[in-house]
Length: 321
Image (spheres, rainbow, N blue to C red):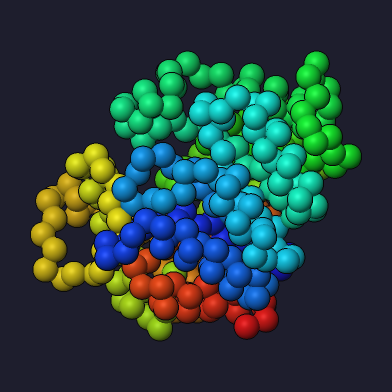
């Protein structure tokens, strides 16, 4: 139905209100195993520090756990935040992962800092933007051009993806690297022009992955109900400053006007509904962006409902179910 567009998953190890944080990590590994059975191309994990709603703080550790319990699916980071790490350490970590699980590891990198000022201080982060320099240094370690050799030395280092918005697209294009675009920028009217510039810079090396929440259920209203816990968490983060664990949908929840606005905006950016509705919206996105791959970053409170949505989405892409 969607031509040659690949289908992958991003799992952020979302915590749930009635479970310990450790359960979220076990759910991530189980979801990866299911994604492999369903024919997903990649399974990526994310980096967040000291966030109550997310248990995954170390992508390399979680990638190792996922790769050890799967066999064929590509596993990677969406992404490692370079401001938090020395490029040499990142090269060594992902070189080790690729040596242990050859041909299956992806390295997605981003430039985001910690979620709050105390977290940024704990990470020893400052406000200087050295992403371009850090990316160049990282690539030098991976391909053996740096004055220091990262070990283990690999003939074919893992591919590097740039989580990009604005200037990041230009950097990725100049470096000939694939990009991942998500969030509000995906709906920006200027995106098509930015992508054209990226492709002109990257040439034949250009590759675009779009990341967004996708939920498939029996109806739009049913899928919207599944999307509410994540939208509520985002609203609380934007208005209170804490991104909480997922909680069950609750019709009696009282929201402020600002929170209702955030919730509605989040739901509008989520591709949700039955198979026909989801297919139509994805087709429009693929046509507008020329995407090569969809990285579905969906989460919801109910694990069974999440598994059902993953299964139905795989079926839409013609994957065996």
